Image (cartoon, rainbow, N blue to C red; front, side, top):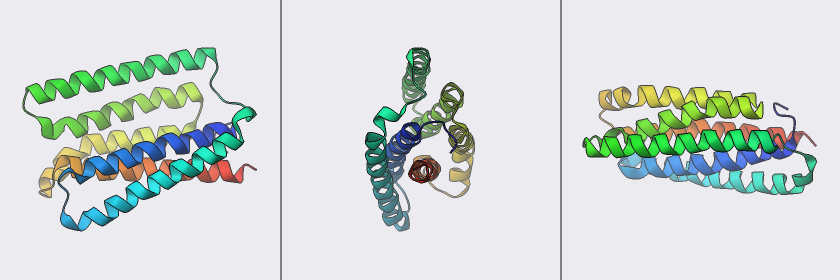
Length: 178
């Protein structure tokens, strides 16, 4: 297993399953009509992954976690910085009337914040999610423009798929740790 604790792998499935569902939802802002069903399917699979991960986490709650007083504090600081950066950048883009770039900004901040989270938790699979979502954030707007797509459709879909892949992998790791 890529993380020391079953509970942490299962909770990664929960958290990434949840956020994959959110990204698939954001992708539904203005996607091509043929994307609707796959986006709904992705959101449903993210929700099922979340539920299964939660069941495994609860069954292993007393089995340990990477979170202690130090990691919890550091994690909280990283997430606080992430939230502030998302809010400030999103507000600035809205003020500049560049709301079409907000999904790219949010994905960039999410991807960037996952690198220290992976290090804090010593969970290498989170580095994969960080790299994928950061790449999506950087390539999303130019690719969307080249294909006449809204950035939120492309970035939401690609971020949702990236996070869902990590969530499903985490769930499988947690399930095979028994």
